[in-house]
Image (cartoon, rainbow, N blue to C red):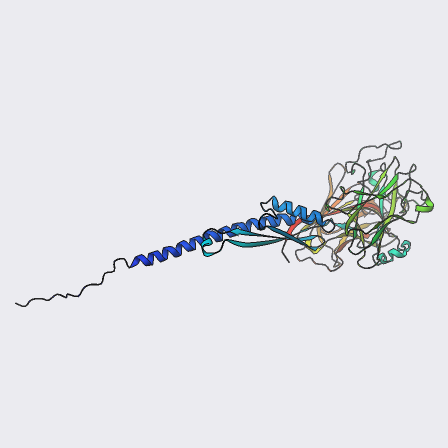
Length: 504
């Protein structure tokens, strides 16, 4: 019998071979988990830091360019309110003005580590930057250092550079007790003037209490050692030539029952550019001019309201209002000369609205409406015109006269007429007319005003590809036989005036 033989070689044992591999994998997983925890912690802190930087930039930007101390104080307050306290530990805050309305804020800090501390990383530096800008109030009426110069021949040598921009209107304000339908909805208290001086036949709901003031921005660039505010034909004076379509007189001034007093007051650099009413007054820069006062000084003449030395750059606010029991229309002009009298020049414009007397004698007159920068592309522009485009052409009893038509037309910087929707409304709030299409609207039909004593509102969607070069002013074309009209215009861009923008 043959017997089987069995191998006597020992079999190698695999027991325990996986333990080092598993331990290595577990160590790697724990390391990755630790790194993930620390990276998540860094990400969370970076997100919080970005939120604080955003808040700091938004809080500080409104104080540019004139108040650097307020910029820093409010930026710190904004960051602190969002959990980041500059000066605590490694926390720092720095800022720079990218432009006169754009602020960049950078926050730096350190995020402590947890598990990666064993690898020698006790903390991780993090930094975040945010840039904010505020949209200035919509400038109206003028791109120059002059506002309401209806006749370039009156310009003094210090304002001769204003002659490059034809304005075709005078700045204007009516007395408190003038009928509203004469074209000034904000300065007058009355729907109709009362039977006796200082009384109303119905209150005006649009009256801008407490004193019916208009506000002008006087924008002073950096590098000026002084500036002087000049006013032309500042008071109410009797005039002789009537304008039957408005009841006012020859485009400069008219005093009814003596006329009211006009106040001109300059306020300091605007620290809250979206609110022109809350600035401190410059006491040395204020003048009240009564009806008929000292015509040798004021009537048809420029006078110096004041001179400001070593001015901070920024937007000063000129406030104009009337007081007293009289009525009538006071038309005037504003100019600002600087030392040195060189480019860049100062600017003067209506802040958000302007009350004017257009005074072209024939044909189509072009009037600066509102400066719309490309930053507003894609937004909606709202335009409001009170009592616009009345055209009798100096003809007495012109109602029903063929040919006495008038049109108001919005013109973009490239010469195009945009599309708009529009409606008019009376004092009762009733919509009396409406339409849509190209923004050329008939305002007088054979001598019959279509918007007498009414607001005409137009809404324009600013194109998403809208652009303009150095001249971004939209204009109004007044197609009238005789473009002499007392009216008030307002403009606003609908949207957030303070916003975050991409970092530069």
